[in-house]
Amino acid sequence: VSGVMRIPAGVVTLTAAARIVERGPRYNVDQFRRHSPPMNAPAPDLIPPPAPTRVPVCGKRVTGHFPVRRIYCVGRNFADHAREMGASAPVSKAERGTPVFFLKPADALVTDGVAAYPPGTRDLHHEIELVVALGRDAPSGVLDPAQREALVFGYGIGLDLTRRDLQTAAKAKGLPWDTGKSFDQSAPISVLLPANEVGALTSRTLSLRVNGALRQESRLDQLIWDVPEILNALSKLYALRAGDLISMRTPAGVAALQPGDVCEGRLDDLLRLDCRIAPQR
Ligand code: MN
Image (cartoon, rainbow, N blue to C red):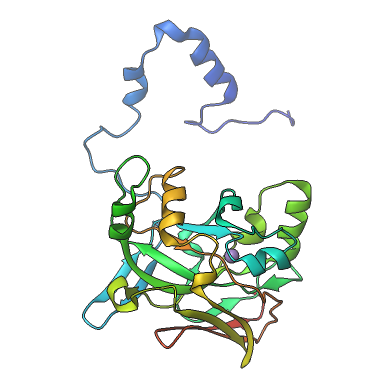
């Protein structure tokens, strides 16, 4: 008779599961355990494991790879960019409030210099940012000032690519920013330099050219929250670990990108990020 679905052997139907739950006391965990591999036996991955994301480290004395765990991103951290996005920039440190954070998945990183124009948007924006790489796990609790510097492994520069139309719509409705920010290939990044080769950040200048024309440029002393302050704020919310990257938010001058555009980010002559926007996949 059609309309009667045959259940393949071995599949636990919802009804059967409910029956098992109903019988409660007569079943115990051991009866289920015999259907799973013993705890100590090697169990194979049943799907291919995701490829780990690594960023090259190109120091004078230290070379290798930096395996990435998480990417934390900071919102509204340059006064001029906060203004251009319609937020009021704080006039003094006391009026800064608290920084805005969001995350990108580690596999959003692009290290080969080509990012595809993403689907779902007509307004892809560039945001050039300083990226801080943590080389040690933070101790539990809020970081004290002496510990903060010791966590930093090195620095890079990155593009926080943004589907601005989706982010703006989400902001207007008070919804999360994820679809505007956390998409595939949304985080092109340069190589990393060890912290001792970058030295004091405040006199460094971050810039972005698109097809040769200057779009963004700012000294890092214009950050509303500096690196130790951001690490302190993050430590109140998350357990910071070796492998975490923190993208420090962009200066003014964000604008749209088109397929074929060539981005050239710089931190003085220390770090360079080249990225071409390829046609949509
Ligand atoms: Mn950003």
